[in-house]
Structure formats: C-alpha cells, structure tokens
Image (cartoon, rainbow, N blue to C red; front, side, top):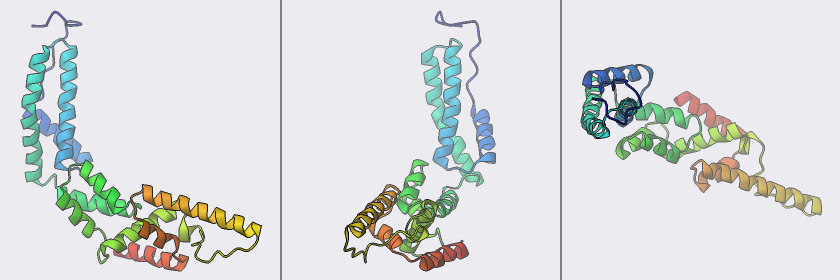
Length: 224
C-alpha cells in the first residue's frame, strides 16, 4: 500500500533481482573493461537508482533500505560470477591499464593510485608495473614515462631547457638570464613532482640531451 507521504499514485518499481543485475553486468562489460570491485560499484549504482525511484513513488523507506541491504550480497555474487566466466580479470585489466598509462606519461605512483581506486590489490598492481614494458627495469620504465610527459609539456630535451650545470654568467644581463633559467627549471621540476615523479628522475630528464631522449622514446616504441 502507498504510504501517506506518497507524492502520487505511482506504483513503486520492483527491486532488481539477480537476473536483472546479471544482465546489467553483461551490458556494462560489453562496453567497458573493468575490475571486480568496479563492477560491484556499477551494480550498486543500479540498486541506488531503484532506491530513489521507489522512495519517490511512495515506498516505505524501511522496506527499501532493507531490500537494498539484502541486494549487496547479490551484487557480490554476480560480480564473482563474471570473474568465474572470465569476463572480469583484475590481473589482465591492471596490465593493460598500466601499459596505457605509462605510455601516456603517468608515473608509477600515479598508476598505482589509479589501479588502487579501482579496487586492484597491491600485489596485482606491483606485478602489472613490473611487466608494463618488456625488457625495462622499474627505473627505466619510470624514466621513459617521464620522458613522455616531458615531450607533452615541452620540457627538458624537448624544449631545449638548460641543465644549468654550466651557467657562469658574468654581466647583469647574463645573471638575469641565469635566474630565469633557474626559475624555469624549478617550474619544470614542479610539473614532475605533481605528476608523482621523484627528483632524481626529473633531474635526469631535464639534463638529458635530445639525442638520448629520442633513443629512449624509440626503445619504448619498439618494446611496446
């Protein structure tokens, strides 16, 4: 029966059962690669939409809340089914996403945060980063990703930014130029720091000659 607080005579919608949630999962997976945790969140949003619709139609809040709570285990079961079917694979997702992010200039720290936000376990995240570029060590992978960022932002070897290791200016004009170079370098270091790169990697990139940077970029492409 519709409660006295009902805004109208609409019949509250039926809650999504396991079949409905399974279908919603399959539709989502047909369009997007995802993790088990992310799929659970997608299905939870499906239930939340039902909650809002049911309450708007005048269903008792206690009944709606109880049903939504019971559906949490159903959501987990459906997501687990997708894992069993092979439609969801956290390891494969992490490897593919890490490879894409590194090649877009993301640092290892940024990749870790991205995967963690999607519910990927720490061990799986670490493994994905180790295998992200075949034949590269962790440091080489980080350096390559930092060079991709430098190329995007026109920093270091991609902008002719001086290393400032040999900046012995004698006159006032030279001193002004040196100070500007120093300020530019500090800004560039800030770009790398905000992107999750360590100071050692940032310094190495900014001091790298264009020819060496090009060799690293070619190596990254060949190992992709």
